[in-house]
Every structure is written in structure tokens, then in C-alpha cells.
Image 1 (spheres, rainbow, N blue to C red):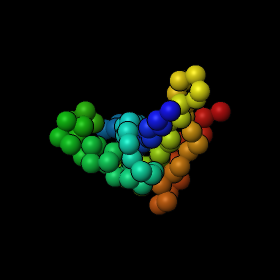
Image 2: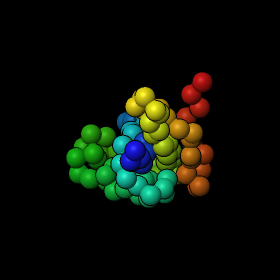
Image 3: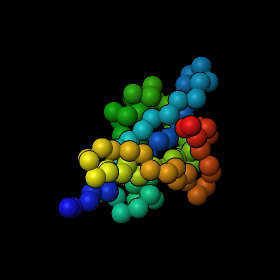
Image 4: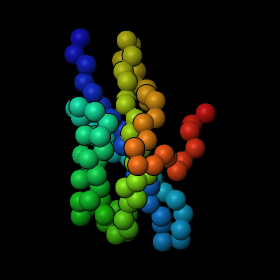
Length: 95
């Protein structure tokens, strides 16, 4: 069986009204969490993604990386949270 590494990376930003929002990016094939973070950061900086956020900047320090894990039945699940080394997530852990 070939295992493919897939990461889910989230970045927070504040809406024009001050509401905390998080955009997530699926990053396949990254060697580790930091490589996934950099790939997602590049994607978040594209003209299209900036337009989706209304031109608002993401807060890079809020990056949260999660490994997507596929079990023996082929069901995808979120692995443990891996906040950026710079700061822990601004969102509470899912229960």
C-alpha cells in the first residue's frame, strides 16, 4: 500500500467587521508540517485567494497544521493539531 501524505493547513484573519475567520488549504505530498505551511502560505498569497478574503491579510502566526490520516478502510480523519512554532492556535480544540 502506498501512503500519501496530506496536510490540512489553516490561517486565521479578521473580517472587515472584526470577526475571526479561518481559511484552510489541503496540501498533498508535503514532507512535514512546515513544508505544508509554506506551500499553503504561497497559495494564500495568490491574487485569487486574496480576492476571496476581500483583500484582507492572513495572520501567518496563527497557522495550524493537521495531518490527514487514512485508515485501513480508506476513511480520512484529522490527525493531531500541530500549531506553528511561533504561536498556538487562536481556535479552541475540537471536542
